[in-house]
Amino acid sequence: MMGMLGALWGIGGIVLLLLAAIVRLTPIAFEALSNPMHWGHWLSLLLVVAFMAQAEGYRGFQKAFSPRAAARARFLQQNPQVLHVALAPFFCMGYFHATRKRQISSICLTCGIVLLILGVRLLPQPWRGIIDAGVVVGLAWGLVSLLIFAVKALGPGPFPYSPETPENR
Image (cartoon, rainbow, N blue to C red; front, side):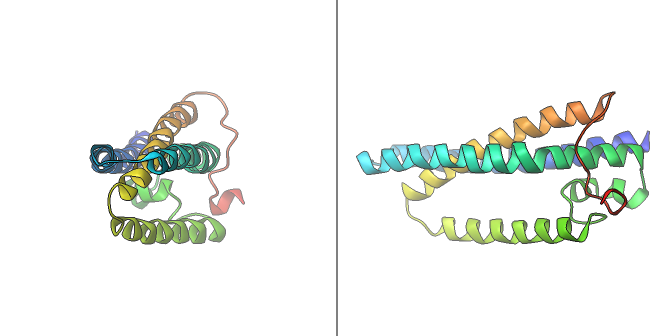
């Protein structure tokens, strides 16, 4: 029972994090549309949304983060420990009880994202909204892919992705 609660808390915590970002950024993206935009803005919007869907949504989430987070939730379901369950969202994101490479990658990626957020906040509209529209598309893709992988991972049957824990090098 503790393992399933930990797995659900891990996936649920990440879902809440993604939803909070989507809810916070969507109005900023729509605000860009209320500004006068010329053809260069529209072209930029199209290119940024397409790029973020492919880079963040497909490659970042669907091909890397979502299956790994779901695999780590499955590992937690099958190997519950009190600290891992209590900090399940951080466990599923690979911040601890992970291979050294996974921990370093997770921390560096988080630091990079924070720096990008701080930089994008300085941009004027409509440029900030254009970038945030792409981010919203990528995050929404990531949210859907995470939920699909989580259902597969926490259900019966095999799940062919590594949780990248020290036991599964």
